[in-house]
Length: 151
Image 1: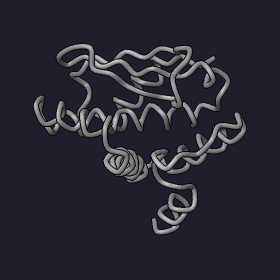
Image 2: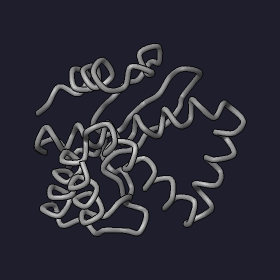
Image 3: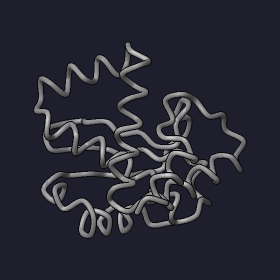
Image 4: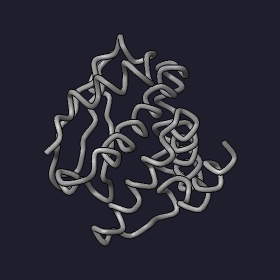
């Protein structure tokens, strides 16, 4: 099993320096509904990234991709400010179209930061687990491969 804190700290140090002043906790959790990773904001400058226990035996790159994806959401939230992020949180919950666009944006952000291959590893692991693919899972594997081929 991977040390989530070490992975998170390394990701922030090397690829997400804008998060260095945020308190971000990570932990494996049971029963994440339809998700392998998700984050919540329990307080100002405090975030909690929950990782589905199904990820305990996942390859390191898959864990990194999931954490990076959630960090991309956090960065977007920080840039928006409190009221805008609350409104976007509401939109995320009530609008399928908004949720799809938001997840695709987070994937694109991490591909641009060098995590495309990691994201493909996460997709392979999700497939190995037999989990379904939903419209709001983010970019497709073929889209990620196409983006990687352009670099």
